Image (cartoon, rainbow, N blue to C red; front, side):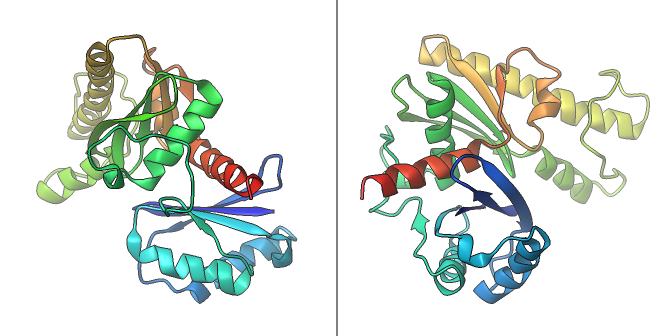
Length: 258
């Protein structure tokens, strides 16, 4: 089995792949002070719960946007799974993606992994909308090359910031209200968040497509992707496993060539 680790700003996802499909997927909140041993205590309990043997994990790949997590995650793989994990962004790991930017190193590992997966599964040109800690729009061309994108505050981050900055405004759940015009403080905030982000998504896709100069597919991923997909026709595909799939593709491409 292969262990894929996607370390984001909010959560770290651990996924197991049996060579054909994802068989298990677990999340733990991101904390840059965790040690390899702490990760293993948590992960070993989940493996035992599923009657899985640590010895069955033969390889690993890591993508992280939190630099402090890299060393303990590498040590986790080396110490407990007896393998050196491939690291997205390392010089010896080929993504087979050309980054058409002045400074390619600026692009987050997760965004490049998504580009690999999206092109492999859906082709291009494409806009990838990722509803994560940040809401990002990434642009790939018909060859799968990365052309940049847009970064805006994530939906939940905006909800949290509004609640923290305005003492009388409660923190609300992100959901689609029945009407745009709210008849209470909570429904007004929900409308502003939901329809505000929906308008941003639709407007941004329109602007990107116009600037790019040709029709583009639109794919959404991340926890809130299904919610927004239900409210607009602009999203063509929803893929909750996009990043994980991309990690397995990158691992396969780099190990099969050796």
